Image (tube, rainbow, N blue to C red; front, side, top):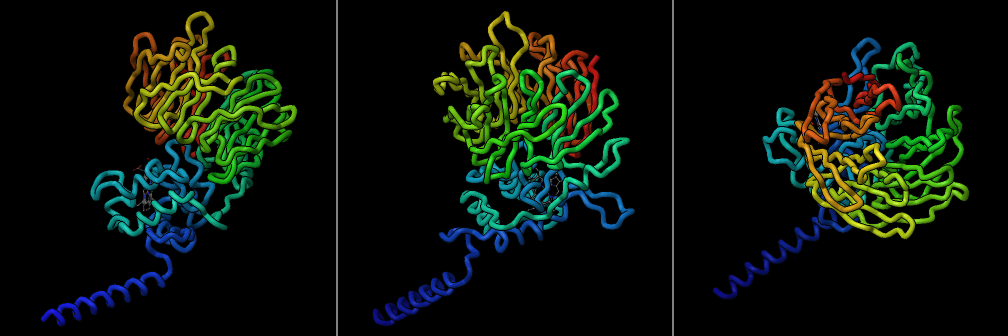
Length: 453
Ligand code: HEC
């Protein structure tokens, strides 16, 4: 009897060992193996089968058929496309829980927003989501894969009598210093528009795959373009204005540059998804200071008027105040409960400086960074992606994911106006230096002018 049991046990053990050996010789399909995940062999097929039908670059099946645009503005068929979204990064290397893609594939079955959508059949298997999780955790390495290559020419060839109707998302916008042009950026490069017609005048290619931020130098003779190649490098390219000739390239960041702020003609600071803020000496094109403290990617920067004090914010939900010269963190303010996208200083020199921040928690929050206090906040009906002040500092303008521009009065602490503009996200906006108009940039490359009354 005892012998029988032990023989059975032995058989079981042998069987278990055999299964174990078999499994470990099968190519690494399971997520808990220690070998690095091969994107093209293990992850790409999942995306191809379950996601590409709705999340591919804009295309048309025949020359007459209407162009099909990627759903939700999310393009998964190229590294550049995946990195293009500024609103909640689709994939954040090392941070699966913060990556939109992983969040959406792991929602409870039947919940709205689950990807692929419930009507498209069964959700991804646990094995598949685990694989994706591990791949992101390990740094989201795409190997050799770049995916479909969209040429900048495809966009710039389109005649310039009116705006092309299909373009990648506009991620940043600025008015030229004289207020006569608008420069916008997307994966296709820099786009210069005439005002007030908004005719596209020219498109210029840039070094970075993805561009996130444009910033004119204080004297307006140069334009800094921040971007990069996701999870590989951050690039700041500096162009002359108005000729738009590339003058220099600053590389030190290890992930896309999301924000750039000038100090004077020979220095600027940059923020990156690599969690760092870097101060650059432009005469030598080298980093001279580094601010470390954000636990996740940094999304936005803003100086107080004397430019000794810098404020930064990011995916880690904190708003941080820094002494730039010493590189020391002065304080961290932690009221936001979701990633923060943007910051802007209230134009006024007399009172205590006030900064506004815009977060995924659907709030705009007002801060006094010099005393470290959140003064008030306003909750919106939709997440604000970008924020700016009217020139007189009387109101804040926000670009929201529901396509609505909202004006917020900081004294009344309420939304005073809602202007529906686009069908889809408004990624970015800028306020004209003098005439009070606002230009917005949308998920399908739209650039529109809005005049709040
Ligand atoms: C049948 C079409 C369809 C398929 C297939 C599909 N999606 Fe989506 N996806 C959408 C639509 C529509 C939206 C926009 C509405 C929304 O955000 O829910 C969207 C939005 C998204 C977003 C943006 C979320 C946000 O917060 O903005 C992500 C990320 C995403 N999908 C990932 C995926 C992934 C990953 C797959 C494959 C596993 C997938 N989708 C498959 C239709 C699809």
